Image (cartoon, rainbow, N blue to C red; front, top):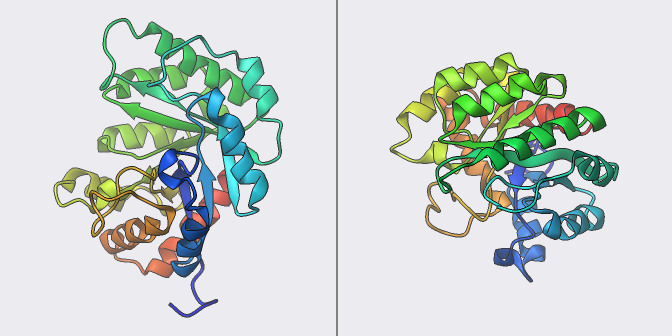
Amino acid sequence: MTPGSFPGLVDSHCHLDFPDFAGKLDDVREEMRANGVTHALCISVDLGGFPKVLGLAEAHDNFFASVGVHPDHEGAPVDPGQLVELARHPRVVAIGETGLDYHRLSGDLGWQRERFRAHIRAARRCGKPLVVHTRDAADDTLRIMREEGAAEVGGVMHCFTESQEVADAALELGFHVSFSGIVTFKNAGRLKEVARTVPLERLLVETDAPYLAPVPHRGKTNRPAWVRHVAEEVARLRNITLDSLAEATTRNFFKLFVR
């Protein structure tokens, strides 16, 4: 890669506050530079850890932060007003990660649905987009997004693994679709087809680091630099250059999140 010639990539979803990266941030940032990854969105999964997420975005001008509670985190209901107050910080560009996950948890998950609604209401109040997680819960996720007016603020269906029909429904709501390292896996044939069809102006790429490292690093601790492998695969699937994919996804990121 010739310095200055590559348009740059953004890792639109990572968890650099996690213990996996303790004491390694300088190396992470150098790897990003070496691979043409210019920015990253550090994602909140619970309010207790939010100050650390925000601290990353305050300390580094190429990091941004979100605020929210992941659907896997059981606990007290989330107050939309609290989210709105925390989102006032200029380095906070999104509400989430929020959504529904029926894969890891079972039983009465009404609390999860109510918390998702609280996040959408907060996003509408503060005018910031949503970062949505859905797993084994696509129908309810889309239903609640429609009922709560999520289209008003838009956002991204992160780490997308659902069907073409779910992608189409999310696009109709004005949402972006983000692909992670899963799209590089050999057994991800259906997902690869979706990656071919999402309009270029609604496409994002991510790592979800430290999870879901792409081929050729599958099974290792993921890192933002490796979003380049995701972008290379999506560009291959769409028969476009990596530069074109990088230019589009970076433009999409800033248009959506850095308003």
